[in-house]
Amino acid sequence: MHGEDVRQVCIAVSRDGDYRITRSLTTGEMQRLEGKVPQEQLQQLKTLLKSPEFKSLSANHGGLIRQDSESFAAEIPRKDGAQRLQWLNADGESPFPAPVAKVVDWLKHFDPKNGKAFEYAEYPDVCPSSGFRLLQPSVAENGRP
Image 1 (cartoon, rainbow, N blue to C red):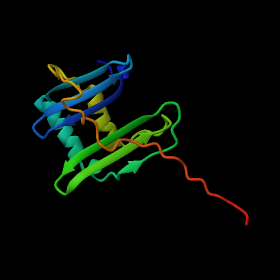
Image 2 (image 1 turned 90 degrees about the vertical axis):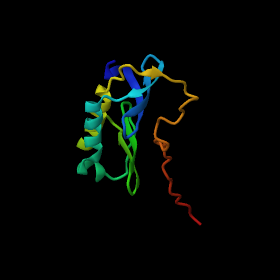
Image 3 (image 1 turned 180 degrees about the vertical axis):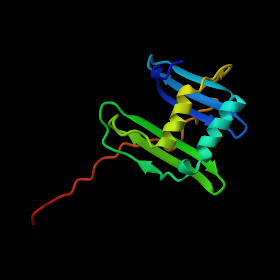
Image 4 (image 1 turned 90 degrees about the horizontal axis):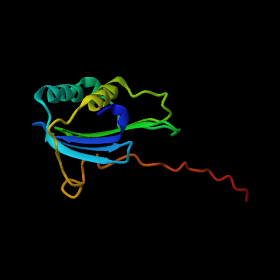
């Protein structure tokens, strides 16, 4: 499957490589698969997530959303709690920082070979629990007495 055919992808990967992936395709189809990440790919992902550059990223980066935008959200369990990241390439011109771009690239190239289909009711929580929220701008009131 080509990355341009995918509109949204969420993946949950356990430490031992079990995965559940949901993909919303540009055709409107929703794909839900579970299986085992091949050892080489699992090691690549672990290396990316353990890199000092990735671990040092701060939690939220947003922007004004224009026509073409990309978002990245992750929850990574750590010894001292979970690292939660949200990044937004709001205008298609502000690329993700290199550590995020490497994880996004890994996702684009991950091919869930031999994955078994699963139903939403079995695992409804594949995507990170705190997704992007659209914020309303605050409006200052300048009233005269």
